[in-house]
Length: 317
Image (cartoon, rainbow, N blue to C red; front, side):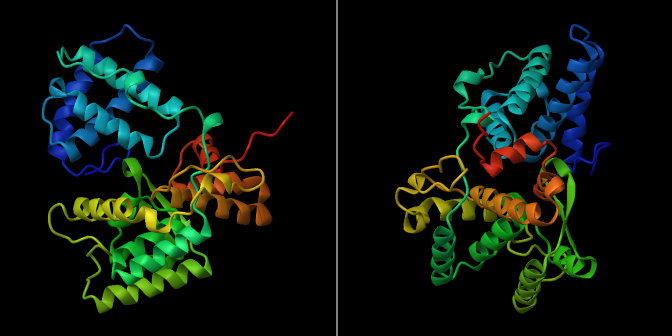
């Protein structure tokens, strides 16, 4: 199911039920400006989707702090500090208006990200990527190798990699664009380079050899909870093996013009690596649109988020 804003929902019945409760509050509340209420409403709609898909919650009044904290972690994946704080204010507003007696954590208890000016460089070093790939090959973890390629070469989120279907890759070779259904159900099209075409061709061969059909996922199993299990497996693999390929004292190996590197690495950091490489390439060919190209390929709606990924130091005035 997709709502009027193209939000793809896995549990439409639960989502509609939650949304009806939120809409009722929205219609009968007028203590805020129309613009603020509308912004809070849209933020809470996205929260309702998360609740329906991840907790199968039926009553908005029953939202607990554990649901709220889980959503905060979800938001941290790809939103600026300002956006997260605004969304949380909206959710708290509707939660309070629902009459719930459950208390939601305040911002100072949620370890929210800092403003962009203090963000470090999350990108990976080439040595780390090469070592990670080699370890995955040695362990026979083809799903990890595939995840590395689609995160590093296409800038996909882990969730997007786990939901890649074979038919999406087949279509990409025909059209020259890989269409991704991303965060919030939003779609984006990535124009394929020669290297990306080669990668897709390689993994279509892998899919055929492993007996996968067009509607099958590339790495996730198709049965219930297959996507969640695959994502968890990839995250666990990273947690268990990170120390084997991370470069020691990596925070001291920052590039000229870039902010200081983070002390650790994550799957999401491969998106940062992709962003920086793609931006550098776009500057050569289309300098005026370079940031916009990267932003669209990453599925960002605000360039302020993309600036965090690029990790450029502020220029001195």
